[in-house]
Length: 255
Image 1 (cartoon, rainbow, N blue to C red):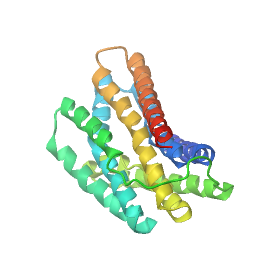
Image 2: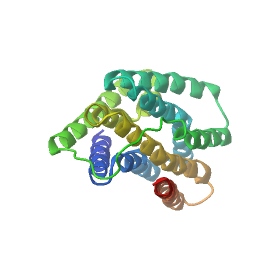
Image 3: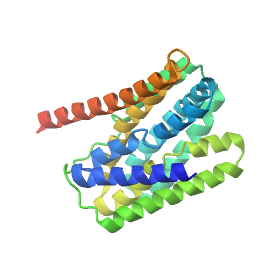
């Protein structure tokens, strides 16, 4: 629990610092990367049989379409409703779809293709609002509140997962913590356009997250575990950086 709480705190802080220096989109991209799940998977890989780790990676991919649905619903809700209602609607979408997907018992190859396909259409499904790019004034007290809120949410999820039924516990542990916390601070202070930019960036980072777990799912058992883990991180960063570069070129052409 301590490890996950520290990783959640680091993710929320680094994402917020990136947003303060480079803008909401960059902060969202960093939050979407496997900054929490990646290190945890490394520890699990060092102490757990490869087959079990591959099963965990596959179970994570199964929930990925639900996470994208959460972000898209939050983005559209933020354009017309307050943060608390947007948060509620986003989580209804997450838990509704997240409870359905494991029941389908899809083959691993289909799970991987579905996860990547949903990530590919996630950003185009987002609303398009004009937003000022560049540095954002995020006070130190807000940074502290973001970190504290993220750690509180993580603690509540971990504690709830320990007493909930097994099928629901797995879904609880897949809840996008920073995807719940950061937009709730961004919407009331910076507005809907900034929130959409944050969430569009989150989907971009989540594409790296998907690449990370697809690499683990397909590679573990066919190559040394340390090599597959390194390739998973390389794939995550390559996808996120490539998509960010592509979005910057589009902005430059539009300007």
